[in-house]
Image 1 (tube, rainbow, N blue to C red):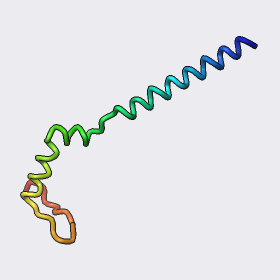
Image 2 (image 1 turned 90 degrees about the vertical axis):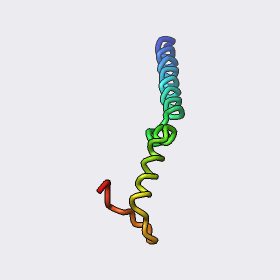
Image 3 (image 1 turned 180 degrees about the vertical axis):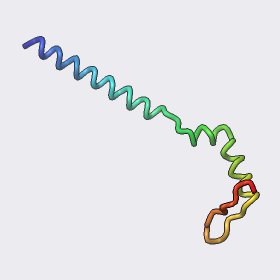
Image 4 (image 1 turned 135 degrees about the horizontal axis):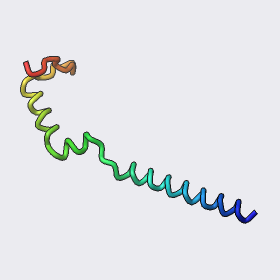
Length: 67
C-alpha cells in the first residue's frame, strides 16, 4: 500500500513539474511579431508599404507589391 501511495505522489509531483515548465515557457515566450517590432524591421517594412501605396478611404489594402 505504501508503494502505491509513493508512486502516486511521485506521479503527482512529476505532473506538477511538467505543468509548471509548460506554463513558464508560455509566459516567457516571445512571438515572432514582437521580436520583429523590437528590431525595427517590421516598422520599416510598413513605412515602405505605405509610401508606395496609400490606402483608399474604404480601408481596402492596395494589392501591388514592389511593382
